Image 1 (cartoon, rainbow, N blue to C red):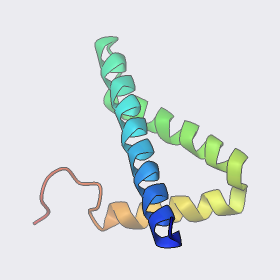
Image 2: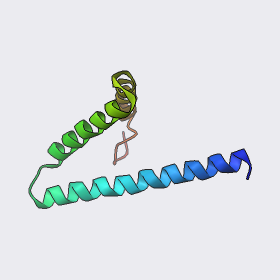
Image 3: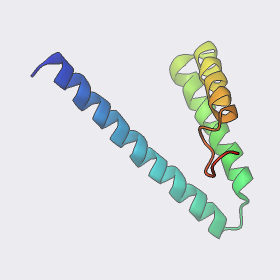
Image 4: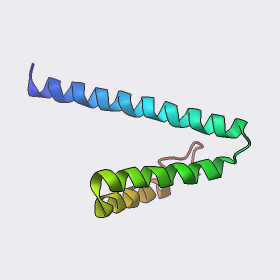
Length: 85
């Protein structure tokens, strides 16, 4: 198997893992909504939990860099569910 093929398979597996993880997060939001928890509270808790995991895996500096990139992407509209004007 060529190196390019190995990278393509690894990237596809990583994308599949992200999609599966996103599905789990969506389910958590739905379950919380059924219990009457406001979506913004779940979102903030999810972000806090994610940052704790990133800090544990990569350290504070790397987690801060990731958070900065997320903020830039949000400001650019990457996470918007409606078209920007």
